[in-house]
Length: 291
Length: 183
Image (cartoon, rainbow over all chains, first blue to last red; front, side):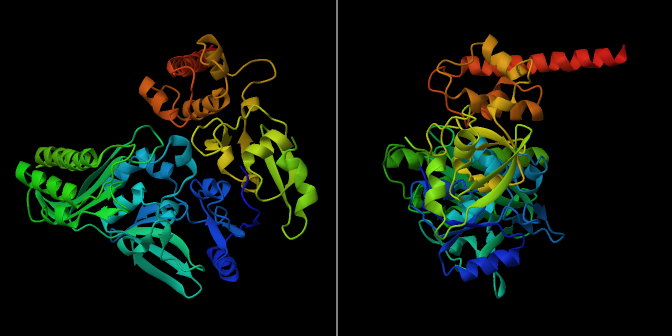
């Protein structure tokens, strides 16, 4: 299958990329990993006139923590970079759990985290992870940078708040207020399929007490669901069976799954509750062992 | 049937410039002029005539078109040829040397790691990337590494055995090399 014709630009600086986007009057698309964009162009769901390939811009392929604890993921950080980082589990356990279950291994060598977030697929895994972590997107345009919280960033299926002349240069996660713990679980029919259901949990702990929590749900609604009530019920508590059960119930209640070929509504709700319970129980035993 | 690559020069010139690119394919420098929308898979198959790279699903699912891009496995149906400018590509034709097969190819031959053979080039290149990084993988690691490559014939059993055998023979090679050095 062949995409529609387009002109190809390969800028080598962010400034140059933004200038190209500004000139294009909304007719350009940014090419990073291309693992969603290229298939969509081949199916002609997308037909940009200009493709701005950012792969030749140095300095965007990073993921690191600032001295203040802010975690930053550059626009060219690929899924595999996170998957292979052995230190990530200690710094960002939710991300470390999600990276190896994104798509399949070959897609992970090209696809980028920021690109996935911008693609805004309602079934995307990273959106749940970032909403659990309270992350943001940093957009750079002709007038400088602005930060958009991930919870606002997506304003519809495959739509985001970027202006046509803006480039998403990085994703950021705010510094933790306690010790980070977390996990991501995903049920898929086969590797590379969309999630039947997925659950991202991020906790920040002071001793055994939860001081901050976030839960994001994948594939069980028209878009990513932030299970805020479920997360709130954990804050101020030590993890125990009744707290975990309450959080699992609240997460299951807030999900809006539809019955389809991947499973019935009731089945998907059950998975959400099971995954929340499983992640929190694992974290509970890890915390108890540590203290 | 005319290929996209063949019909392109006559049709393109109007407002979309054809781009010149230089790419190292299996150790050989190639310079080509292509339209930006030409997929890497089509460049490899039609412009370079390396038809060992197969296009299966054409929708980023099956992994039959897998090639190594600077050593990392990529789906060549999901990249544009212009993106390969200045990069190294290894296709299945680049695995064997003039005189002998790659241990991975030997493994597929000895363990009968294929039936129809359509997925085999992609499988072998994913295996190559795995063994370069992890010369002594467990069966589980092999299965995970190949999980982006679909096979509709074998049920994967012999493919996994083939990769494990290749890992073993690569280690024997290394060991005998070390021995040779100490003598």
